[in-house]
Length: 146
Image 1 (tube, helix red, strand yellow):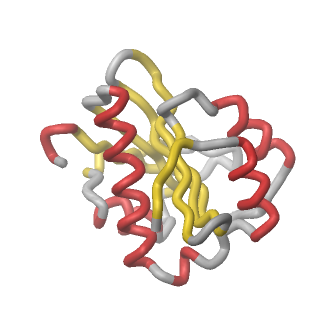
Image 2 (cartoon, rainbow, N blue to C red; image 1 turned 45 degrees about the vertical axis):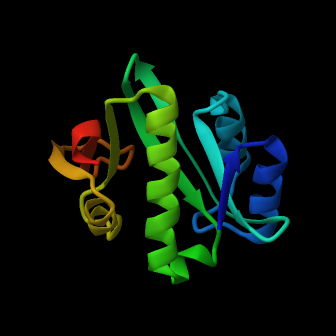
């Protein structure tokens, strides 16, 4: 698995291969708008098999929100998912001098355990955080805990 800076063609390849989540034009455009140099990376195998695209959206100096979009096959291999996610996020944290990265997921989502496994710490409950009024939880990763 290789990690490289994000290029717009990577997103086209990932959408073509199939996503872990439902693809949409809104999602596609949102990622392209967030694509600041050094804040988004692509994990791929071979020449053009994109496995994941992830990044950290900066809130202010040193603090940001992490996100990762996986291909439909990567979720089948959790060990690879752990490795790819951690490598991408740590690289961005180091390159962009983030001292705190946070992320959210629905409170009843299996991804909460995934976040804990790669080093994120539970921060708290966010009641009625989602558009459907369901709860989310926040996790953080601090540079000193890496």
